Length: 359
Length: 273
Image 1: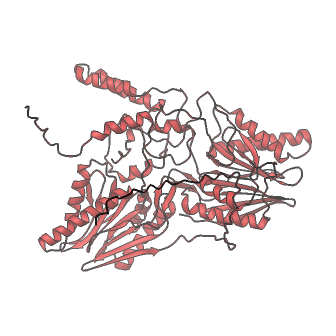
Image 2: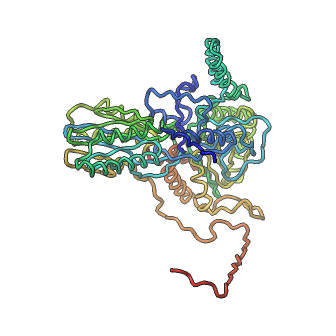
Image 3: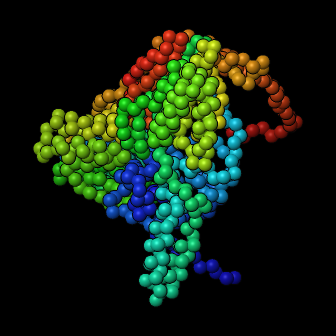
């Protein structure tokens, strides 16, 4: 049976200017201008474009709350931080009729209707039944309109004496491109580079926060922060906002105190781990398996524990990154335009660009 | 013996499964995502006929499912239809109407008319109350002249000199509204359609890859598949890839042989032909 088309401008939140979910946009434009299908109890069946922070909200509240997986199941999985509080809502849920903002509006309009129709008991009972069937919000401050996903993919690879950090430069919202030339990479220290994908507002704030903290550190300790130190700082910064997280998926790359490549991967609330390579973002699930196969890094699960850096040379690693992004661009709509590649080695930080598909 | 009286047959769409779907949703069962084409499709009328255009990307959420699919469907030798929305729906509905048109041609002995296809499509889509998510741009040339129509999933139609549908329709329409004029030549028409599709391809994330064009004139139709390929792959590793056995670390191995039991039946019947 064909699934009903979600279409109702009546339930769009007032504060958002762009459609919150990509799948809403095509169905709106493909429907006749005068369509108003009143569907109070319909949930959006559209698949979320990104791994939802809280999967159970996109389907139904009765879905069993499984262990929280804020990041996409990338390598490695985050440490079990199963919270008891409500995790941040997914940003991709369109037509979320359980949003408090919308529910209030609907309630007001329906109660006013009920008032005017008091003389018709049948109609008012119908309206009351409608009112009771609207699910009440569980959290007062919940709302998908707080976050937005701007897409993009980041990759970091650690080598013997270098580290490659790469990210595409496309900034998008819904089905639109905001800009083709937006850098997701932030140079925090001499030997530390941070790449983040997700909600750019939070990412800007996070980068600014870390840069300021780094400056303070420099004043207090008279030296630059090392990569492991910055790794810990980022984790603490993210966990500090555990109950209103930064919607940022980060990979931190650099050289450690011995000059070896060092990559840390994070989820949205600060769970981190030092790894040999990692990806985050919309194209991460397309890129990760290729890196698993081609980087020839020893598995972290093998014993005795070995260094996870790749034995590949710097040029080979950069070549792999370029190819892998070109492939991800073919299949992921949020990745493309241009690729920014940053290589950190003993001689400093070097930047390179590669044109990607613009469609 | 009591005779059971049959319930009168209900006309129109049966909504019985809607309650069942809602019940499944409440239980937490997620509907499998269907593939939408997330498209840019356009059509315009020029002095000798009609030009249709489409991009070639089919998406499943954020992933490109098909980089070079065909969105311009055959309806009749003189009528073609571009489809946006759910890929299965556009395919099924255009195939169905195409068959109906052929039967009609045999019955009447005449070339199909665009309004015939239009009526068949709109009545089918209306009877499904918008659940068949197909947004179409129908164009063709028949004895009465060139025609271009848009059909919406709920069954409404428009007759227009130029039209765009799909997620990239706004990008394409901006090109048409700026540059369309009556009495375009064939080359100008094709160029304008290609430009509109390219606008959709580059500015809409749901559309991409290549441009397909179809030119229909009196007595002749030209289907220009992959008329433009503006998106070549930007980088190919010269090294190539090798997938050596053992490249992915094997952490542990356990081999369980499958024992098959073979039973022989003595004196069984010979198999019939």
